[in-house]
Image (cartoon, helix red, strand yellow):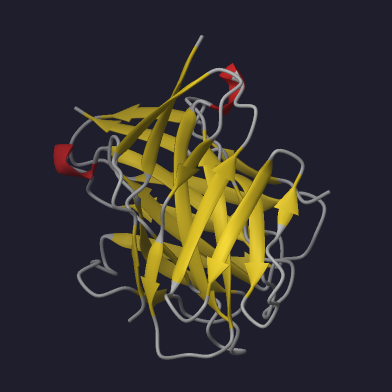
Length: 116
Length: 116
């Protein structure tokens, strides 16, 4: 199989704090991982592409200094929301492919972030 | 950038009946992949079916089948013998077949209700 986990599944934090979300490929190596943001009843919006050992590629309009992405190994990528504010509250989903040119992505279960 | 359009925000179907979800896309590429993903209330994205653009034969997975019309850039999903567990958001997605084009483009989704 191809399982992707995310931790935590839910997090509530105070405004101004930073939150780290982990995305792990449990049974395969992922050269590339993707981070999405999803608002209620909306589609997935790609935030950034995370490549192991190199800097992430951010989509237009996504603040790279606010959403820090680190892909330190072939099985782990992290998204850190720095100085979170209520408008950052959302559902964050990661996905991973088994190889650079895979034609399928495997999705994590998502993380619900609530900033008070 | 490629665009994916799902013109039906909401659909409903009677249990055991058949329903078709529509999807159109815009691309100048000749080789690509198309997907249908299901997102139930748990928010976990689940791959339903995929189609390679170079294949003329429509993909089928048990009760799920697609009608792929390459010239029309149309990729509809047919669910036969609908079951209560089919109720979910359905997203159509596009991915380029080029080596560096592993980004997925998602449609806005169709919310499917199954009526007992």
